[in-house]
Length: 173
Ligand code: SF4
Ligand code: SF4
Image 1 (spheres, protein in one colour):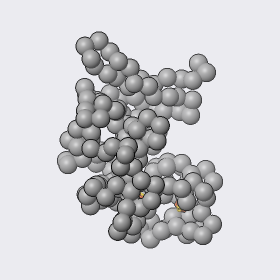
Image 2 (tube, helix red, strand yellow):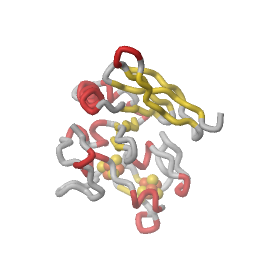
Image 3 (cartoon, rainbow, N blue to C red):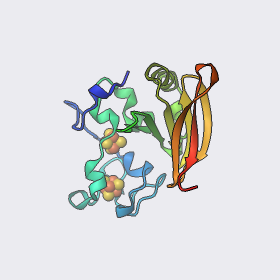
Image 4 (cartoon, rainbow, N blue to C red):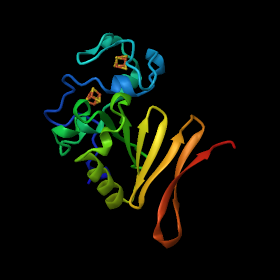
């Protein structure tokens, strides 16, 4: 179980990106001209950043969960799993940002079963993104949330019978 107390902001001992560059494909990095789902124009896939010394602060600040959590085994390394794991600092929700070139990889085992177990054990949803398209996993199942825009927020609702569901809310609506 990924617990907040174990979250680190530094790489775990022995962890390094190696040939992985997947975070340079799956996220928006406006300062680098990168849009989610497409390789950043500065990326040399499998080799690293072509402007490493001058890379934007967003890139300097980023570490995926595999880099910081040493109990995530080699199968969770993003270039192997084909998705990047992060945890929202405020909500402790787990985010899966999938490589659009393998958009269903998270449904394979051992990933799907473990993601469901984390959602159930932590009582916190896991949100899977393919570019901006989101799917939520909770202890009670799976729900398609659709496109999430900059003005959308995801909230966890308690339903009758102890069930929970993730809903999309438009702020300023
Ligand atoms: S996704 Fe993680 S392991 Fe891969 S390059 Fe980014 S920080 Fe490194
Ligand atoms: S600027 Fe470099 S580190 Fe940042 S997303 Fe692009 S390739 Fe990756």
